[in-house]
Every structure is written in structure tokens, then in C-alpha cells.
Length: 363
Ligand code: FUB
Image (cartoon, rainbow, N blue to C red; front, side, top):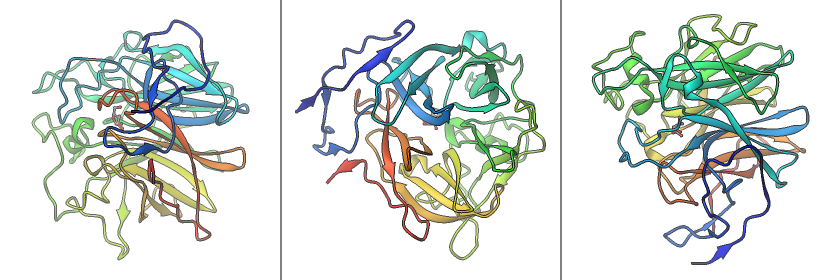
């Protein structure tokens, strides 16, 4: 096994974990060489939501932590309890790892599982959106996922959580997109551990399936989209379905695991088109669909990231420095599904607006 030394990492605040990761494997256990390297090695990170605020790049990741909980379909092994923000001046430059920006202990309604967050900025305030299980208990002894919001005057935090989750929110993986007209939308949802399948009829079914609906010939469960109020802390309406259509204009079916929505929504706009991007979960692709309206429907276009090492990946896409960038995660540092590391690589488009698919391994 060959190793390479990772470049400078700047730490501020108290390091939560000493990984002793100055020697990083440059090949996966199956011998394939990684396309890109972890952004930071001092903590485990995943689900990177990247933004440019006041000329600097901020990444809002999940902060993965070691646990003895075995892997299961509910994702109990993803036992994260706090967030830390990453900052860099430019892609490829040194990365600052911020101190704890929000801990579950500071969120009155939340109990555990501080999963994939996102952030937004408006009128001098930074907003951190995050999913967590509430303090109720279902048949598995677990709380119901809700989405919370916390605010700060600094993009690095610390953030102060609202006392209750966003009214009308459920499931997980919030991603907030602000359109050119200033209207903001939250995209959210995830099946299996994200519990979206339990909300099929608009209310939580405590006895619902732990995975998908097992209705392979029916339209697949969709992610959700909802316009935010101007306060950026509440929904302006009831969440709608973010429908993904196939090339014939029919909804993608539940059995179409290579194309159907699983989790990890992220939306960006380019050339007048809204790109709705998401993970397929159990088939491990990152896919995209495009539309002309932030609510959709979106027409399926293809995969843009092939499977990484590890069960999950989750991403964000931003333009900065004249290029487009894909932030994603794999398990290069640990080779364990629940201990991930975020990465970044350039994303390219064809002249017709389609995305050039990326292989996370070098040929
Ligand atoms: O990090 C926990 C969960 O794993 C996220 O919420 C999902 O998107 C998947 O990455």
C-alpha cells in the first residue's frame, strides 16, 4: 500500500479527535486509486454543503464519530451529535476546521442523529438547517426526524437553535436554494433511516416500513420541496412532491433503484435550468434531473458520480473561481461506512447542459 502526505490543515478550537492521519492510503482496498483526497484528516466529515459567503468557501458537513453501533437499514451507526464548519479561501488552499458550531445538547427538541446540514445567508444572519431525531420514541425506540434551524452572525457559528423544529418539517437532508428573485426553497427527505416512507399519507406512520414502500410498479417516493418564508425559519406552504419524470414524462418507479430518489437533495441553477440532484442510496449513484421551475417536475438526465468507497455519498455543487465544483464524501480514511471524509473535484458540463459523469477513481 502506498501512502501520501496530506497538505496543511489549520485547526481552531478544540480538536475532537486525534486521527493520526498524516499517512493516508492513496488506493482503495481493491487497488483503485482515488480521484481526490480528503479535505481534512483531523476529524471525520460527510454530507458537505458548500457555500461562498463574502468571498470565502464554507463547507457545512456532518461530523462523523466512532461508535460500536453495528450498521443497519436505519443508519443507527451514524450517531453524530454536533457540527463543525470548514472554511477555505480557495479550492485547493488550506482548510480551517472550526470549533463546535452546534451540539445536540443545545437543541431543546432534538435527541440524536445530527445528520446532513445546510446553511444560508440573508440580511446579516447565517442560518444552519439540520435534521435530528426528536425526543419521541417509535416502535424501534427512536425519535421522529424533524428539521431544525439555528442562527448566527458568523458563518462559522456558534449557532443558536430555535426552541422547536420547523413547523411542518419531517424526514431529513435539508438543502436550501435561493433563486434569483430572492425566494428560498427547502428541498428535503430521505427514505429508509430518513423515514420518508412513513410519511406517505402526510402523517407519521409509527408502524410503517423501515425501508422503502416495496411498491416497485408504483411512482417512487419523491423528495420534498417547500418555499421558505422571508424569516428563513418557517415554511410558507405545505411541502410538495419534487417529482422526477423519465424520458416519456412518466414518474420514475419505486423499483427503478438506479434512478429513483433516495436522499441528499441539492439544487442549483445554470443556464436558466434548475438542476435537482440526489443520491440513489442503495445503488450508490449521484443523479440529476432538470426542470424549468424550482418546484419541478424534473426530467431525469443521468448519473454524475459513480459509486464511491462506502455505502453513502452526499454532495453539493457550487460555482466558484470560474469553475463548478462537486463536494462529496467517501471512506478513504477509515474504510468504515459511518466514518467518512469530504472531498472536492471539478464538475464539467457539456455544451447542451448535461453533466460529464465523474468516476471517483482514476483509471
Ligand atoms: O450522514 C447521515 C446520512 O447519511 C445523511 O443524512 C444521508 O444523506 C447520508 O449521507
